[in-house]
Image 1: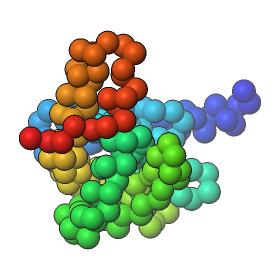
Image 2: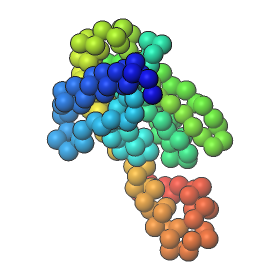
Image 3: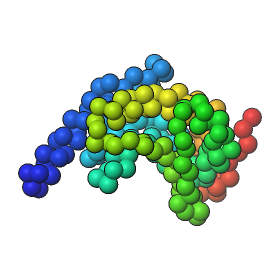
Length: 177
């Protein structure tokens, strides 16, 4: 690897470490962000999102995104779509939604940064404030959907039927009680 790339990666890591160090969440039990790779971090989220990623690329794009995939991701995607206006008001950010594939279902929910991500002090401030607002908005929303409970119930029912029936029970979510 050449010296310029190593230097860029080192600078990127230092920037994202400063975001991690400054991140404060209103949820006391919210795990901190962690490095994902070069020029992005991930913040743990409830199932089916698993995490929300903060990123910037070399084309000037930056912001947050989370992937929602499979049957449970599809359920969450359409619930977020129905509530998108209220969620935008609550977090103060515009939501961009995209279905990438219908079968198997794969989607992305994005929150774009409108400024210049190379202006690091302003971008860092936006990331720290926006990450807390997103956690405050999306975490309770995803938790109240009850999808994790459905997944666990479906999984335990599949185990009780034996390993050969797992795929069937995962295709059909049991109704929430």
